[in-house]
Length: 540
Image 1 (cartoon, rainbow, N blue to C red):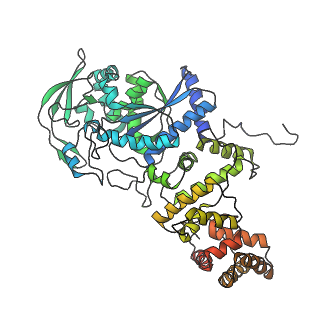
Image 2: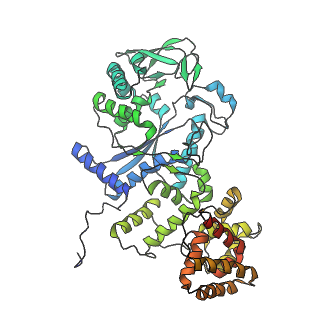
Image 3: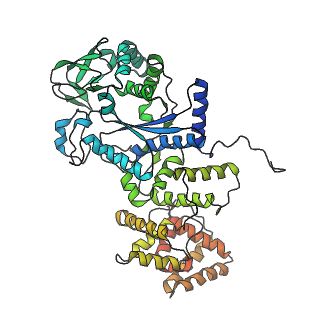
């Protein structure tokens, strides 16, 4: 230790992020349980009943983040992506063909793809999740529920659960107040006659043959009565013609696959509570370690929902920004509800570059713990494969301003010329960012918001107002550059301080492009709008 240095209150775990703390707790827990540490599996369960949104992607991203942290601590770990494609289609997501009405309550793996490009409805929806995961670089073992059930892999565990159906039903009633499984068995057969899954009510289990007797009867789902066909029959656990309900299926998966970590959203609190009990008391398997997270919500503070159509997809996000920005959205913190809209993209892209400045020492952070956390976060958003050198950073907002005035023909050449005038070195990364900024401007218009509050003294406000007038009269950017110095000194303001305040007004950060040429290009009206917004107490 350096002489005179204060001792740290506690050691930094791994890379100093919440992912590392979770991984460390997980390892210590497994050691106490006496279980093998040869391979620590994390899991993410995803549905296949509708178009995946950005919140759906956050679940496997979190699980993979913990896998990376476990690897960083020296342990072997993989992430399982378990797709529930035996789930029945309860309603038609907004925007999908009404013809799907004929397939309501059928397992989504047995419904034709309405777009005609995949083998089933489920395959299409699953591909819309695995595509961004693959593009981001998240690795996973893919399990599809219909293949697991059809292969009989869960049959012996399902038999154990159904053999204790009375205890399970009592536990569900006691833990979450649901009496449904006091009246029927915790198993959903697929009716052999009509092909629907939830109308087939399981009423008897033969322990010797592992078969379930069922009656296809009426059921209410989402305030709608679905009529059963009246068929009575038997379904074998070994043939995959049925599934366990979520209240017990998680536990069966954990036991089958030896899962050690799974996060969950707050809407699954009851299901996880019951599954933990089933895992311990019925299956004799200590359930995986959990963390609970809040959902991403839209601008109206509603949860993203496939059924109502307020879906912001990972593919949409990647149209405007690189994968690191999505991972930063997920990894920067583990708790709290997040309002997720396209307006986050400019800020998060700039934040990834701020992390890069810390990582490569361009920005000094004195606090050792904070520095470790920021460097660790940078490594995680690059999936522990960070670049070997920093890139050229141009604020997204600068590129949005250029996109607003650039010609459609010769866009890259226009941007490159302007950025060089602003003092930037232009490379492929910068031009790619400019292209995505152009798409963002086309689709959403404007330059978005700057969330930084700027306090201006009366002298600083006078200087900015006077500068706006001089921008109007200036013949080039160099004249504006000189005017900034003149207006600052005329009022006794330190010029660098005025530069910093103008950058904050326009870009939400204390530095940026060479200011004179930039102000000349964006015009005096842009400066006046920023001042007016500040006067109203709104973001600049």
